[in-house]
Image 1 (cartoon, rainbow, N blue to C red):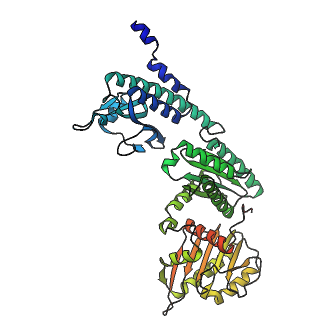
Image 2: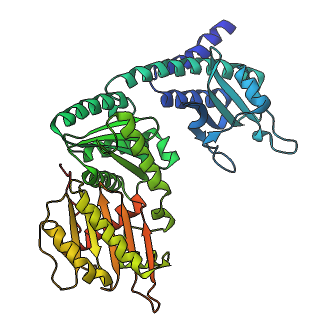
Length: 470
């Protein structure tokens, strides 16, 4: 009769064998945590996977279950001390509730260990019976071993997928595929003297970057925003690469903003994306070189003046001007004219460099007219958009008249340089009684890009050609 009673029960192996069918780490993590909670009668639980990065590893939470008193389990788990040593040996760690606390505060730590490697760690709390018995601990340890085997299988499956053409998590191309595409594009551009851009797009919020659903949504939105000739690939947690053929330093920034805006519009609100761009051959000729520049510019955007000054897209140019003037410092009266003249001379000396300049000369208008007249007669790759308050401007292919933005005084001097030359922004007020002027100037790429596109939206500053073909 005892044998007959047990014939209808599933063994631990029977209950855990289904984990081996899951092809991805996240699916195994969720399935294993659910089995552990059911086995132990736990009301809450969490599961952390070790994310291996070059030179280090981090425990990142990939699954959670039930209500947790006080706060959510941490996103990142710091394992140290006796608990870490016991888990590394494959032992289940039972931590009773502190004296005077309800028994439900006790917890159980379960390792997922295989071949000496600790793949994951589960935490269980709020047991239904008030404590975790010895039988429960033994069953959880066996489930952890099965889960470790399933994680090892999923790791091999994901490694094979990474070597293939498509990423199993996002459905877009893998980085390996993109590296080959970039190599072919570089060979073609070398032969025909053309350019292309490489973009790095990162989900900035770590919680969204570790959420497979959020990553898939961003991947889908990016793919739908691309043109047929553009290629998107995924790498790691929340990072994407985009190859943009036939784009130079101007065009790649336009594409970058289009992609970020399209994803934000499709997914709703301000989606936390940050992007950086590099162009061939200006920033490098190999994928590794271009990728390094793109990541550096992405980090510069994240840590630049734009966020420090708390500038937003709903602010008009006149508001931006006042915000920047709050950071201005007194400079000699000749500084502004000399700086603008230096930039115009550089356009003359580097006629092949593509770029755009917005210039509101202010008090420097009379002394700059000769340089602007000479520039208008030359064939150069930089186009100057000259703000006009109803007066005449020099004619020529390189000079285009624009109205002053609303709310700006004709006495204020603006200079925005954008393109292949180093970015630069200068804003100067009228001279004071001693001839000195309050000047704000910066070479922060994110800030220059932001001001350039705000000028585009208000007065038609020419940052709108996409892609810009050499």
